Length: 396
Image (cartoon, rainbow, N blue to C red; front, side, top):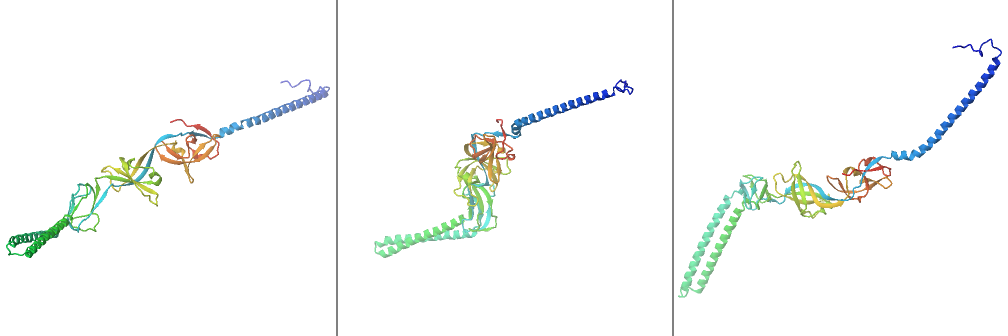
């Protein structure tokens, strides 16, 4: 580059003052330009500042709306739902018959049955030794023969006396005495026969017999054991092998049942279920538990053992009520409730009373009419009064 221009060469001292004036003017011009640029920048910044604030104010409601959480809601409506109840209870014989000693007892000679066997009505279950009673019966039988012989002799004497009374050899008083003797002899015969019958009846009661046909459940006697009327039950028999479930239910549920309602019984630990029906409803309620018993008749099956535990599903007709998914029903210390979304899209708590729980969901007995928008899930993360953006759940 060539730096030796005419303006800056030292020999040109005459133009030096002129150059200073020129530089001063140029310096002022640059200051003016810079001031104008600064003012322009300030004006643009102010424009964007005030215009941006108004946009934020305008967009604030939109941002606030976007901040509200989105929730899925269901409108349950009202539908017909099978009304079912669940209960637990103990399996027992429908007619559990204890069998003991009916007579005076004695030493058991033989036991003829085992638990699990079927017996007929009147079948001998055990035999008590009876040698003494047999000898007494033989003695009484001999007494009957003696009484009969005396009665025959008295009758013959009476007949001879009646044949001689017309000839005057026997008085009428003798005949009357012989009639009385004959009658007394006949009475002694009847007494002896009654004593013999009583002895034979006592011997018959030494056989322990089944009062009815059924299944032997328990045996509490062995040969050689001495038993009496106070020995308690020696056998237990389920009449006809019929079983039942003693299902315990709350007082409110018990009031809605009736005889003949079908029931499905599932023993604990078994995959097999058995069909039965309610045949009797307890007329009393336990004052401690406020529960009563529904007795469910079950046909015999070897898997149904008295004393076992079982669950029952009682089909008590149908009801028309709202049906909600289980995720929509919440529970806390104050009770069971759901969260509904109002017309203003705010959350509101609604207390409910649930009915039965089915595979399809939870039946709401009280608290909803079916037209409400109910929060389907995640209700525990919402608070009453909170604004939400409801989204209708897809139909299933």
